[in-house]
Length: 265
Image (cartoon, rainbow, N blue to C red; front, top):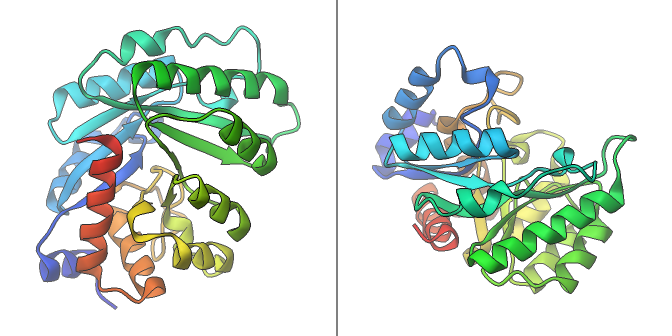
């Protein structure tokens, strides 16, 4: 089986990580080395995703410093379980030319202490902001499929949306595809028990597929259990190419093209 470096040399092209969190605490001690490995492993771009006011500001700081990093700003549903959540920063932060989307926003019903109605309210408000700002939306969805689909059907996103780190059913994927949304697959597609996601990977239209790491989380095989980083997106690409029976070079071209189109970069 080819290593990351062997794949890179063989196809002699770059790749994009469409969803990373470079500001995460796990990188505080060695972020320079992580960024160096991005260059060494032919990352063309990394899309650095905020999930609060503070991390959105940090995402912008990275983007301002590095030409090949872009920022996404917004309030994660875990930050939206109280009426006191403040999303007023988004409009101001989105003025920066390196901000390419609003996110990650959405619904997360995984934990028992969440407030579903408040999450839905802030999700809709951030969709409205994205429409006002003419920006696409990066969506987080966990254990909230029916409410998510209802909101997306009732609140049209003008500049399109991507379901990041997709983990829902084949039926939900088909509904997203009907709405012309994008679906992004992470390292979970490489897991041995990921039969459901493998089925989703087969049916995503060529022009609606993105790939991501969601680093520092969800490290793909063969490094599952270790801290993730953008260079590992090659492992996810290789697995999806096997599932879709397409060569790695062609799939890299497709996902790069789709990511650039979605984020307008």
